[in-house]
Length: 263
Image (cartoon, rainbow, N blue to C red; front, side, top):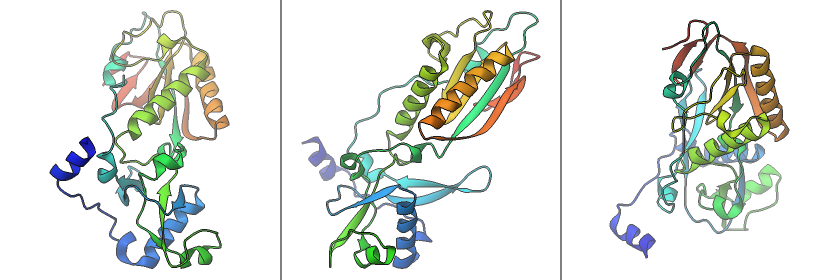
């Protein structure tokens, strides 16, 4: 009933697609083929909702693939609240006199698109259909003769209302369980941080970013390397690794661990 009421009362949504991708059917189907070659899609004859691709620039000038999921998002309830770290998390840490704070970091590459979803969920994220003749050109089986086949995402789409919640939970859980640290060492804004006097590191997981911090640089590196090895063992790509340093940037803050200053 609530879904029917929503359709009756909410204005229709026309998803936005990148101008270049939609410039011709051949360009669009080349894009779809690239997604297929990267194991990001399968095909269905029974779509539920349509999503469309567009791109935003990353800080290094490359393009980030995002999806207009506004139509699909209407089917999902709001994700639950989730405890997150921020600059406040860093400022809550306390150093003993004479101690330095060391931070080691890593980043999960293409994190959202490394998280799989099953076909029942994926059919909520179908792309516009492709021609059945394209399957023969691509050398793959599928497609309905004379009919249409809809690509659907097999990975978590950036643009889905639950995407960040899922990514945050996955990374935080995997980082904590592989760190061999107690749960209170996974720090965020909604709980007081543990003492650093015992030289045991703390971990901060924010979406695809990992920070390991503590007053013992050897222990910090050991924990970071342990988590990174675990993530790679699960099949995630990890890059932008840094070893324990008193100078770092995290969550929009510059951290000077020698002076004990967060700015």
